[in-house]
Length: 177
Image (cartoon, rainbow, N blue to C red; front, side, top):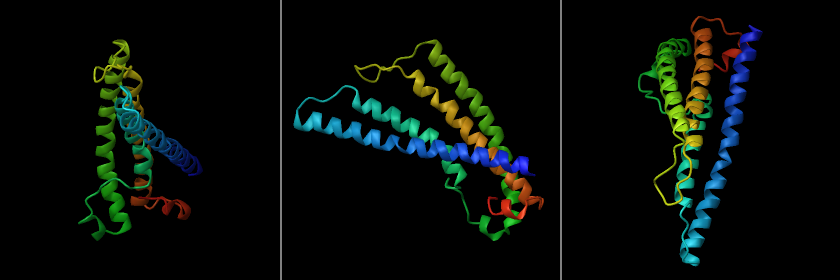
């Protein structure tokens, strides 16, 4: 069981690290927007790149923060009936829904990889502004983010299986969803 615990802790650590690292992007976005505001309103010289840069950074932030959000059970969930079940009952429900989520995200991951690969192959550039930056690095964040959410979902699913079948040791039971 220590091997499984170590694997789950490693996945949690990756989600935690990525989530905290990505949170710093908010400061970068704020800096870019402040620069744009100053350039536009104080110096009457707006940029051609600030809006598109913050859009790309925000998209990357949202995509990569998904695993961190999933690790902390912060995604929206309909809990009207969910809280009527015992902890074990919720784990059984989570095993069923978690399996569906893993399958859906596996398909989504495959599609996202094709989406990013096509962007790289075409050396895709943005047409949203006169700046025209490359978008393929940002499109690569989609399969990365989906893969990280899938990995965290897998860790949560294993915990739910352990809880549902009373296999979790006392110290791991507190981490179960």
